[in-house]
Image (cartoon, rainbow, N blue to C red):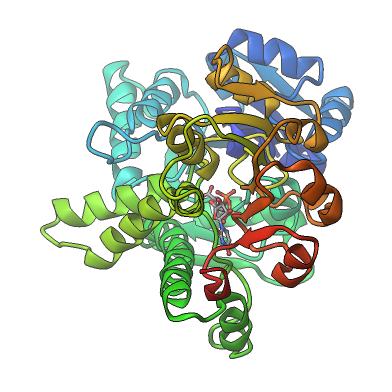
Amino acid sequence: MRATVFGTGYVGLVTGTCLAEVGHQVTCVDVDEAKVAGLRNGIVPIFEPGLAPMVLANHGAGRLDFTTDAAAAIKGAEVIFIAVGTPPDEDGSADLQYVLAVAATVGRHLSDPVVVVNKSTVPVGTADKVRAAISAELAARGADVRFEVVSNPEFLKEGAAVNDCMRPDRIVLGARSATAVETMKRLYAPFTRSHERFVVMDERSAELTKYAANAMLATKISFMNEMANIAERVGADIEQVRQGIGSDPRIGYHFIYPGAGYGGSCFPKDVQALERTARRHGYQAGLLQAVEAVNDRQKHKLAELALRHFGGDIAGKTFAVWGLAFKPNTDDMREAASRSLLADLWQAGAKVRAYDPEAMAETRRLFGGRADLVLCEDPSDTLEGADALVLVTEWKAFWSPDFPALARTLRERVVFDGRNVWDPVQVEAAGLAYYGIGRGRSL
Ligand code: UGA
């Protein structure tokens, strides 16, 4: 089938590439000429395991193309995906200007019947707005082309995007018409061979499903961070509590890891946008507000522990920081906990020597040129002249450091484990002070 994807960000690029991989003819459209030129040469602007070779292979095979020419890409497409950004506007609501601009473009150039798919995370009611925007453009030029708008939210995770897209656990589809459902089922057939994965519903429910999923996941994390903060105060160890509750299948082991707060381009934005939507409908979503508040506080947890250890004064101290991306396997630093930590450390007069396996270029872009930041080549480089070590992102490469060597190198012999990946007993046996998240024994 012929599919066109607007937007070559995480969602658009991964979706387009996976559709080409299973044999569809895909055109990806972006307004950024440099990005399009790069993609044609296999230059993938994001770090996502497995994506670059797949882009290159499918482009080489002639199934995946990139263009800035929207009109040409719309012509002949059976399915058009809208996968452009929905950044928060000033009050935290999702800004729909890019989504609606694509809808208008589709309306201006549409000549064949098509299914338009909302893939971006969009507030409830957006399918109606997209439909209206396309209709308005068609009417303006006196054209009458049949089109359907469906909502098909994306659930992929950064760092595992290709796998999530190739093996979705469900395909949520909000649609009004049986024809649109049939078209989408044909498009996704290669992904649903082993068993039915479609959950078909009305558009508004599909739109809300996306927010509900992210809000639920964010709630689990804030809940665990809240428990961690209680555990710390009562002398309990959240890691033992985590295992104790995860063994109940109704709770489960997934996504209950306490840490330095959730980040990324989705949870913070989506929880906030859903809370704003509720407010606009006259409902105070107290739980969502609390989820957000707990997370905002948690992002300062590591700096708080450091200040506590050093008696409230860290001016002039040097901190080695391991991990800057908002989670492992990505170079993305949007809303990353590391950013709050760096800001807090600098604010208190401390210096930072930082390393991340993938996010150094992004760190340079964000903070390059600061006198109180040294960008390091590897983890051991960060330790030179450092007083303390803070682990912020749990890259596998950081899981088993040589603790006795750390104890010899770190001037103040203290580590702060923002993801509870180290064994406090082992760390302390090496002669280091250990601080984790919610580990009462470290008080
Ligand atoms: C998230 C969702 O997991 C995806 O299902 C969704 O499609 C995506 O948002 C989206 O809306 O596009 P992502 O932002 O890539 O995916 O990252 P996650 O793996 O969910 O992690 C988010 C944050 O939560 C990270 O900062 C991570 O460190 C933190 N986290 C995660 C915890 O603190 N504890 C956990 O137990 C799990």
